Length: 258
Image: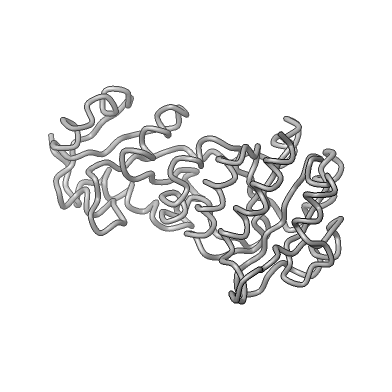
């Protein structure tokens, strides 16, 4: 049987494109072979929707899903959010964990995205944090939903590799109690990233705080952090993109810790 856009199971899955319905169901959509492969490896796929062509092309993925449902092109288009979908969309269980559970594992590197609203930046930071060896990424305060479709795609599967946490904004105390120094990024920070690296400060277990590109970190988080750190600008650029600045900071810590 081939499901169409009007089939109730497809229509119900499509609701997961909305945050409210994702939160109610505790599920989200992962689109494309890379995300589906990582979701299957994590054991969180509830149902895989795929076109007949995709089932043949990605036979290994279809075989590993407990439930694989064939959909028509219009059914796939209803579920996918990209202009040129690759034929696969999985319904997945949400994977976030409580902050205390993530910190109980004693991570040496944590990224906190505080009230950032751009899902592309958030997903890219998640991917970068994973690549840099971070143990957790915390979405603090009124931050973008980590299960937003664009965020999931930008994470390129890293959503399933690190502990994802959704937390209130007041994260500094539990981070510090877990043995992490808390470094806040700011274009006006008193500390220079290169100087901290040279002085060995970055070798300690660290939580980095990143704020929105438009407004930066909330003042309460800036004030609560152990240090306010700026990334040096050597050329004529006014500033770095948020995801680029996060990559520089996370990799500086990763290198120092190794």
